[in-house]
Image (cartoon, rainbow, N blue to C red; front, side, top):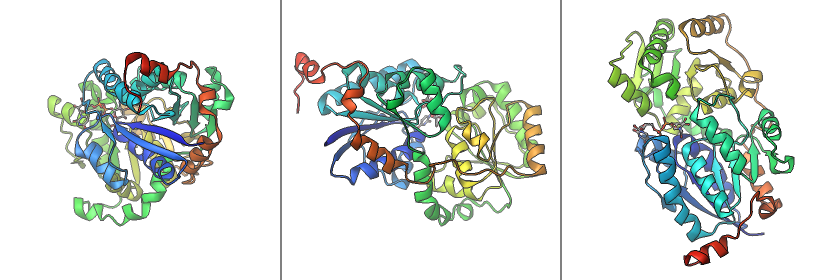
Length: 383
Ligand code: UD1
């Protein structure tokens, strides 16, 4: 059966998950794929560079929403994506991850009776102070088909009453991108270009609101990382949210922490693959380091990706001086060695495509309504 799909993304961590899927579906005559970029992230360093590095086709629709409070941003995406769905009448929409764009698009589609396919479904930190956790729970409740990356996600969805037949363990699309781009990343000459002569070195990312929005918390974290940097130099591509916080609060920890501009996909992958240790509060980087076998200390108290701890090279280091130093000391005694989780093999996009071919998406819609009728009731032309 031929399927018209709308793939929707908007923030940096969406793009490496969308890329392999768009490529796999785009090469198959059974699919027509349109790309919507919400514009949640808009700087070239947060968006354009990723489209180029990952060779994602130019979006068919760019909504240009920009930044705002959660309510403003989510509402603006909803307002701007609804006419696109009405105009294109897709058989389903595909949303990825847990950002505001994911939630907003899922809400609009579900109310139009369009099936929602959620990539990276079912992950749970069980910490509702994370905006992403709310986005995950609501998106999953509205989705008709759930593609999961690890067994915990399968269990979480079942516990929330999601029917087993709508859940498919396909592997990890982000790791598809990683395998596809690793050799070009290694040849990108990133260290020479950025003047990183230190070896070994650590790579740091920090952007979670709970870590960077509170000046005391951010200062504590940066100062303990400065201590670590005296043994292992730390390179830190700074997210715009964090850059603002550092500027606002005049935080310059000194020592051997080297601030960098945000990096594109290939440059970041190059540094990650060559680093002795990654320190991060990101979700996706916990998975990428596990795939690369690089030890990762996650500067959080919880993770929605427990497989990276159970099987991978990730350790939860917490966010206090004491907990981070403990984890660091432990790492110094012997870096954690992990293994690559099942189905993180670079073929997740193919599996997604085969599931999409085999499944009756309309039969899975939780709350069907008639999009065509809704469109004609409003007098919007159906193309
Ligand atoms: C968002 C996601 C988060 C994800 C992160 C990756 C939500 C709720 N959060 O957080 O899950 O891990 O992206 O980066 O969706 N800004 C720029 N340029 C840009 C984009 C943002 O300067 O291109 C600045 C703006 O000042 C903005 C701030 O960064 O206010 C935060 O951006 P926003 O998209 O609201 O959240 P992130 O922290 O990026």
